[in-house]
Image (cartoon, rainbow, N blue to C red):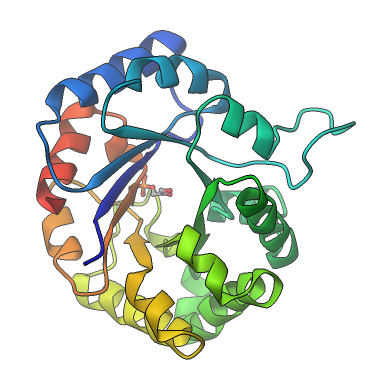
Length: 249
Ligand code: 13P
C-alpha cells in the first residue's frame, strides 16, 4: 500500500512570522491522520519552519535546488545545504521553473540526479500546457518528461522519488482536472514506468497538483492512481490544508 502524501508548495509567499504561524497551525491541527504531510516554504524560511516541526510528523521540502554541490554559483542553493538544514524532499522541475526560468528536461534531470546523490527525495513535477492538451499531445509530453529522468538516473531511482502530475492549465487558475482526466494521466504515468519495472511502478507515489482544494480533494485522491496532492494556493491557510489532509486520510 502506498502511503498518501499531502505537500504544501508555499511558492514565493509569506514572511517569517506568517511562515511560523502557518506551520504551527498545521502542526496543531494534526491528530494522527494517515497521509505523510510535507511543507515546502521559501528557502529563507526553511530554518524557521524546521525548528517548528522538530518532533512532529511534518517533513520539510525545498522548492528547488542547484545541480552543483558547492562553489562559485552566485545566488544558488545546493543539495548539501538543504540536507544540512533538515530537508527530506525537494520539489524539482515545477512548471513555473520550466516556463519562467528556462529549466529544460536536461536541467531537470541533472537536478534530479544531484538531489538523489545528496539523499534528498525529489518531488519531480511533470505536466502539459493547455496548448499541448488541445493538440492531443499530453501523453507525448509526459512521456518525454519522465524519460528525461529515467534515461539519466535509471528507473530504480524512482524508488526514492515522488512524481507530481501538475497540468499547467490547472495551476493557480481555479480549473481542476476532473478526477477522470487526472486518473487517466496518472494511469498512463504508472503504466509507462511499469514498462521498465512493475515493482517500482506499483510503489511509486504520484501526486496530483493544480487547484486542489478542500472541496475537490477527496474525489481526486479517491482515484486508484492518485496518491495525494501537491497544493499551492490552498496550502497557505492551515484550515484548508488540514481539510485536504483529512480528505486524503
Ligand atoms: P495551485 O494549487 O495554486 O493551483 O498550485 C498548484 C501547484 O503548482 C503546486 O505545486
